[in-house]
Length: 314
Image 1 (cartoon, rainbow, N blue to C red):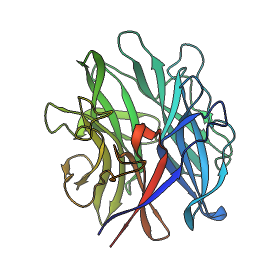
Image 2 (image 1 turned 180 degrees about the horizontal axis):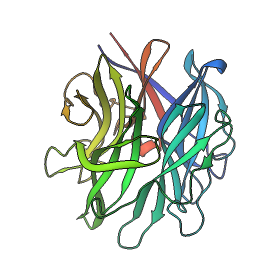
Image 3 (image 1 turned 120 degrees about the vertical axis):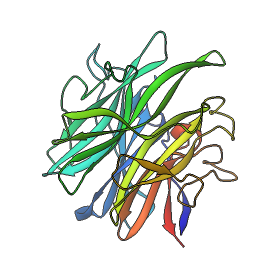
Image 4 (image 1 turned 60 degrees about the vertical axis):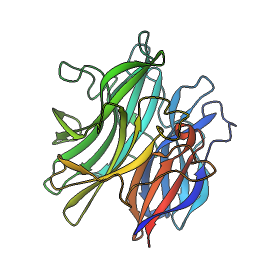
């Protein structure tokens, strides 16, 4: 068994001021009654600010785009709040008739390029609209995690515990005169999806001093085993160098906290020889659809070339 790439699905055509480039970090919501897969993603406006948009795909043919959202799902935060420079969706979960959309809030900084924190928006009308849970983040940096937090992957387990595998920045480092962030994946728990307990549990850690970006966990549970896909890169020249750019890795866990990395097996995903994903592959989102295991992912330019998909098959 292995991932079989099926090609590019969507990239913005720059016709809307709020969606000029990028379809980054795709996140799915299968709406069975309409037979569509709604894909939320982060696009960028004419000022290069991240905003959440969506497209609806035919659930029987994921390459068929049925509808493109004509306005952002959420707007920028009030001046001075954690998301006044950008809003990037990272996970959606359905619970008790509501849709919980976890997102990243962006601030532009001075000594470093940006700062992120974790936000939440909730829909009570089946995704027709979302309202931000609060003006502030669910969590931000603190004395235990002094830099920033980012993308979340959230599952409600059989015991009712909400489990979250999230980006945690551990340092900024000057590389070729550029401030570059280093981040890996940590684990948190909650009883309600809002109040999160973070104990600093590292789920996917750096392999060596050169690895710098481990991000966008996507976790499913099969036969009692937690299975995670994520992207990873090195510190230097990861934007342009094939040897250092993003790849999609894979890991397994019994308890959801301690994981065994298996990046070199057949469960991960690598670049194509040519085309939209020939330089990098990143930000996987794995889900089941009509008995098939599907992965949405980004390619070149961190989503600048859009998102495509692969199917797990012989």
